[in-house]
Amino acid sequence: MAIVIFTAKHTRKLILLYQKYTYEDVCKLLDWDKNIVAQNIGGYKYDEGTNTFQVFINYNKDDSINDSIKYEDRFLSTSRLIALSKQSRTPDSKDVQHIYQAKENGTKIYLFVRKNKDDNLSKEFYFLGEINAIGSPKPIIMRNTDKKAVEITYQLETAVREDVYEYITQ
Image (cartoon, rainbow, N blue to C red; front, side):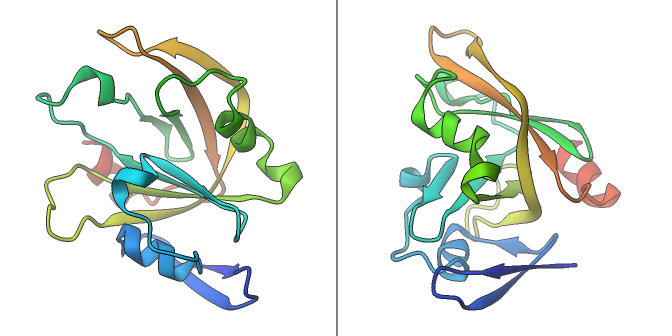
């Protein structure tokens, strides 16, 4: 299944559900003005020029990474996901509010997930489609830290195919 995207330059682009894409691929496909390095994306990135918001998740975190970056993103089902905001955010933070106001602002939010960072060469994420924030943002303190973050519950417009879901979550 393909998702048709009309970019800010009114170009019609296809992003294929369950295909793998790198950060660079996403920047190109969505006609961002420039390629953004992964460190500057930091889990998610709003692009004002295209009015798109990309969420990138490394699903399984290595036990050796610092607790302050061990975000506890998790699927609740094949069609629902909890993802954490960046650190030091509250429900009133601009990026969190932007996520929850996406529909009324015409912003499309797209989900990209990889099982883990073991694939150091390609850095590819599965494209899992469009998502929308539901419910209310939930402030938390990240486990074993004093760092604030916000849990955001997303509804996927298309449920994740069972084989892909099992691969990512197991």
